Length: 113
Length: 116
Image (cartoon, rainbow over all chains, first blue to last red):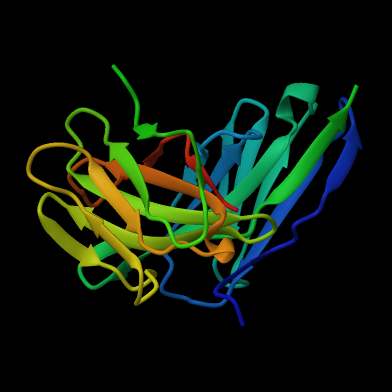
């Protein structure tokens, strides 16, 4: 079993839709949770960062963490064609004295104008 | 302020040749991480280095792969005697000194290696 599971998609939605992206994890040692966005042929860039269970909002993006269920989500409101990208969840835990990051496989999102 | 730089952006090698991938971290960053990305597989951790030290190489194949981050100059990921299965995008990330709070790895644009 992978430490982090993420549906690879692809996910195709019409412009303006609410998008829900999800990851589950098996290792309760993960303490910090992140979402990265990766455009085609580019490096990942950090979108959202959360620590505790609950919601964190930033503009059209909301990150949700449920540590009891080992489940995290990213919601995108009023989706735009420019949101078309691959979204990777990532999680951090202590490993040998440093913070090691494990990534999900990524979900490819396409927003249709 | 320049971000993480990687070169070359594209690299083509024939089977059996050596591939050298370079990564210059962001200014002020002394921690470098290398990842490999294959389609449908996400980012796989390979190695974590600090200046002149390998901290964690648990994701690095035991043979043919090596990495260094010298006191001066970029970090180098070296793949000897490349095989077709080495074809992938290789990303480098860097971070500043670790703190208990917010922590972010900044990624470079990647090097796309194609082995013929």
